[in-house]
Length: 146
Image (cartoon, rainbow, N blue to C red):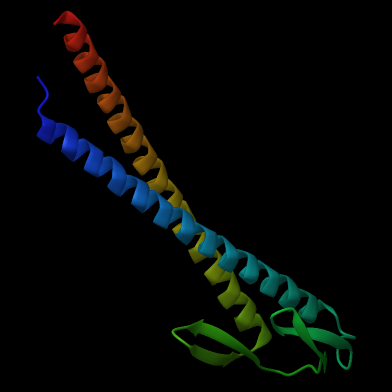
């Protein structure tokens, strides 16, 4: 006989797992956006490195809200790179590219870790759902026997 406490614990765990899964989906969406931004930055830095005639060309700089500023590209020997926690460092182009590549690798690892955790949570959720269905079936069988 299954106690009502066991059912309550299972239902509570099931709800907590759903909350955790939702948080992970949100986190993964943010991580995917960061990965896309880093890939775009890497693409631009590589083009910047390979395009010897880029100096003096104009481009549009996104400043948010669908607003762009026209800017002229000069070839500075330093690039400003965010390294986290609101800290920015001056790097040469090759070092900036290396830093972005490391960031991409780290993001991929975190995304893989979170995806694995999400899979584990889904599996546990399915186990609980199956157990609760089994309990419900047994209770229905007992109800019919009476």
